[in-house]
Amino acid sequence: MIEVHSLRKRFGGVHALAGVDFRAADGQVTGLIGPNGAGKTTTLRVLYTVLRPDSGSALIDGLDAVHDRPAVQRRIGVLPDQRGLYPRLTAREHVRYYGRLHGLGGRDLERRIDALFERLEMAELDKRRVRGFSKGETLKVALARALVHDPHNVMLDEPTNGLDISASRAVRALIDDMRKAGRCILFSSHIMTEVAALCDRMVVIAHGRVVANGSADELRAQTGCADLEEIFLAAVAAAP
Amino acid sequence: MRPLHGAWAVFVKETVDNFRDRRSVFMALIYPFIGALLLGLLLNFVGGMLRGQGESKLVISVQGAEHAPDLIAFLNRAGIEVRPAPPSPRAAVRAGHVDAVLQIPPDFTEKVEALDQAQVKMIINATRLSTVVSVSRVSQQVREYAVQLAVQRLRALDLPDTLASAVRIDNVNVGRSRSLAGFFLNMLPPFIIFTIFVGGVYLAIDSTAGERERGSLEPLLANPVPRWQIMLGKAGATMAFTTVAVLLQLGAFKLMFEYVSRGDYGIRINPGYDAFVAAFLVTVPLMAFATSIQMIITTVSRSYKETQTYLGLLPLIPSLPGMILVFVPVSTKLWMLLIPTFGQILVIGKLMRQEPVLWSEALIASASTGLLAVLLLAIAARLYDRDQVLFGG
Image 1: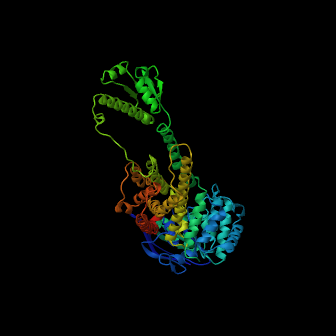
Image 2: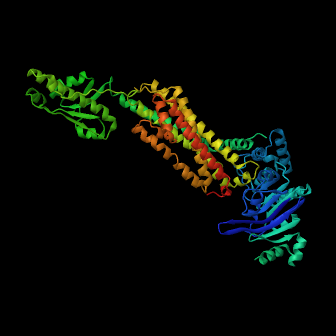
Image 3: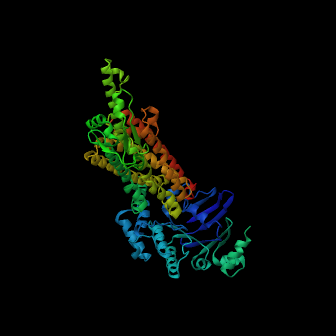
């Protein structure tokens, strides 16, 4: 479970986060939606422990992302906006590296990698160096790497960005599986159809604040709009 | 879980990753041979020059040899072979066809017999360094011939020989190694220092500035490994590459000396294996020092290019004192030993010249550099812990 309370963060004179509050429950997919520069990535960065907020708190399973950093890090799987692979390493070496950073090793680790590669249908990528991988292949490696330690909370920044239709569908299927397994999934996107198809709840962020929060139906009721894109535009426009 | 498992995982990954990178491998495995190759070629060249000196024959072109048969006989006895000069001596010397031309005027013998002052001319080209040895030897022999003539004249007048030259110079060479050896051995420390600062440089750049630019630093920092361990793993891999580079370079130097001292170069310098092992041990704290500085720079600079610029200039600074010491040797003082790189240059220089090195000297240099390295590494760890590490600056 992920809880965010009055999160604030400034970069120079810019308020990237001006008091963000929301909650993402277990067994649910929560979508973080907002225009470019709204604060989605900054919020995720605080949640996955690479950025300290100026004030407010970010809790993962009740643990503080700043004060209980190592414990939080063991409970999260992270797919950042920039996938960040190493061109000279093979797909398996990427996943093995992160497994080892999580203290895994030996046969157990290799078995986990085998299972993930099967689940993500990437067995043929196993021994290939990632230089020259397509966007879909890159995403699969980054996802396998994020999930090797079987995290309870998964944070995905624009997971389907730039993917073709079949790859997007595969990612959506994986997210759906993880929800059924009772995990807490938080993902950011600006593609409304994707959000509508996947999310149980939506958190709309604009100008560093949450401007709307709820299920698709709740948001329809709040804004009086039927179409999701209309809801989004109405919520953002209503923000101060 | 082992205590440093995170640092170890990072170390292994960076080592494997960078072993597949051509730039990293060049700096660690190929670059170290350049110093030995250059110095070997230089020794070869100088050895060729020196062969003109001493036992072997020296050839000099003489114009008007027939005017001074006595002088020519004197030169021949000194091992100097005389050849007729080319038609236009000045042009030939300027063009480098001959080293020098000795011009003897027709009235030479006449003046000598009249107890007058006879004159000869040496046509030389002072810009050609390779002729220095032969020119000075011929000049010296001519001067000795003049002194011999003067002595003969003094004896004829019943005057003491000492009037011929009021001051006699006897050279006493106290340099431990013979001839130019010390000069060449002094060139080793700057080469070694340079390698220490470039051996692992690409790994240092790639593993933090490069990682940041590729976007892979962000997910890496979300792993449950303390940041100081991540930094330590990267520093360890950088130092491993540096160590390999230095070992290869020392090995290459030793091989080069073996080859040169066995060959017919007239140069007998070959520091022993013990000197090379000791030199390696002395460089270890300096390698840690260099790695720490590289980690700090790669952490705070804003881009790969910026890091490359700073770290490209860095090796010049510590190598400078060594370059100066090649030409202006100084006596060792305590404060010098305390300065990283300077202390090592002095100690390695002594080891190579086979001069006695005091334990205290090596210890003071190593301890002060080692302590500074630890301090800088702690600073690098603090810098890694800032959020700013994601963006640089």
